[in-house]
Image (cartoon, rainbow, N blue to C red; front, side, top):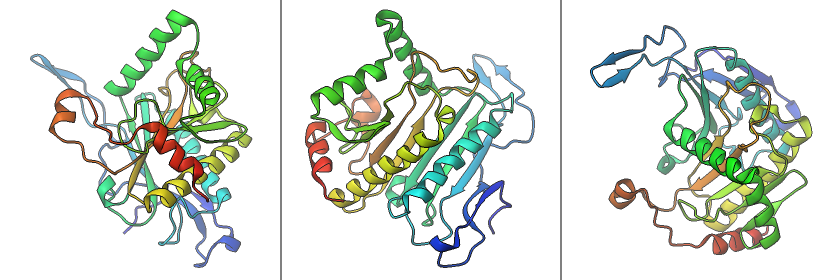
Length: 288
């Protein structure tokens, strides 16, 4: 049985075949990785540190219709999914124990999805994850050296060169990154500088839904609707409402076309058989 909803967006009956009262629901995960109740109780055990699994784990149910996917949803409905992300981030930011929110989607069994019904997830953490801290530190080092945001520089270079450009609109650019971890990896970045996803404006979410939907359709067209993951990279939630000058939020989309094996785990290097310029060309030329 689905847990009681945290929030829901009321359904527009013109878009629904099942007369459900909701179009999007957010519910607690039935088997959460972290729980809201309790105290952190940080402590040491010799050289090791530990704390309780305090946080939040929520499921964003993206449609009441079982056969829908994000790629097939109307763009307006896709936009509502993005607003659900924003609303949950803003609400969870009020919990002083939390430091970072991970929003992600596992689409397809090979990508880790345990349910077929279209959904994404949110996990709120009491710490900033190591990989996120490394990305933040690297961005800050670049900013301190050049006094520019590295992501803003990447956007300018990719627009000028065009070889890794997938598509763009007024507010966003979609690119195959220069050194992708997997074939046909795509990043969606705002052309305006902003470090926190939840600080964007209404028209930004409208244009984000449009380009995000377009990119997923291109991936489906070129790759035959593969399993994929996407992750929202955003600044830690405790930096206030002001944008960090060195960091830039973005989505990373990774189709599951290869496997991570011993060499990748042992070295941190990822073997990618498809150059990003070729991936971008295939996606750019797809008719959707």
